[in-house]
Image (cartoon, rainbow, N blue to C red; front, side, top):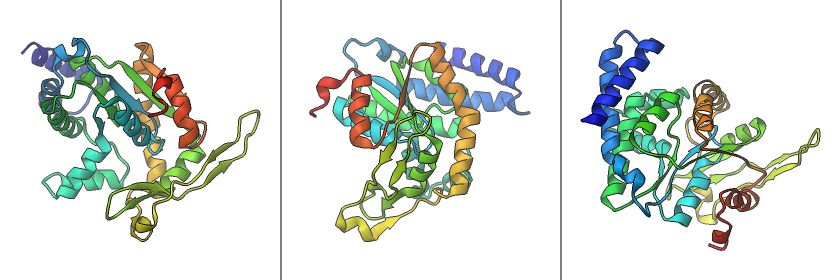
Amino acid sequence: MTVLSRLILRYRTASAVHGFCTRSSEIDLTIAESAVALSSAIPVENSNVKGRNVQWVFLGCPGVGKGTYAARLSNLLGVPHIATGDLVRQELSSYGPLSSQLADIVNQGKLISDEIIINLLSKRLEESQAKGATGFILDGFPRTVRQAEILEGVTDIDLVINLKLREEALIAKCLGRRICSECGGNYNVACIDIKGEDGSPRMYMPPLLPPPNCESKLITRSDDTEEVVKERLLVYNEKSRPVEEFYRARGKLLEFTLPGGIPESWTKLLQALNLDNHADK
């Protein structure tokens, strides 16, 4: 009940300051209830459990590679990789009551509401907790300061990894993404080769091509169009950049600029995370 009271007070105050909407009290109560669900999935006590695994967050523009590197670290460290984008896509494919609403939001490149995201995340964390997991790597959450405050209120995040990439490379990567319609594998047909200028190094990112059995089954995500990609980048710059400052002010932000493709970037990321001894795995 202490957590519930604190969160309701915090988000009612936040809405009064930001003028969230005319029904702010009703919406704040809904968000507070979602936050309580989140705190149930990540008990406050777990943040201090001796020997618990990492609780990390990946930040970065859409298409930068959060899922790729978070999934690799998940396998390396033995903790769940929880990507809110995957949770949304699963909900879309379920054809449940949220499907049509989510489809409209996603296809326009807009941000999904805190209430929906937190509820989806809470359910996924509860599943991990039921399996005995004591850590996680979040990918795609938080995307706003409001979400970061909710997460801060229920657990201690150890580290926030902010992946960065040149915008021209980002757009090319997003437009080159492909998914196998049969196995769900993620691939990229873009070959990015950007010459270095003004002292900056050349950037080369080879395509991540599918195996022969997937070649004829590749599809493009409906939201991977140039118009939607640019809209997502615009939304990120407006809404999510302040999240970087939120964690930077708390001394938890690790900035990592991707120097190239996976082989080059992965090794250097492990070095930045002091995980060099895991490189052979």
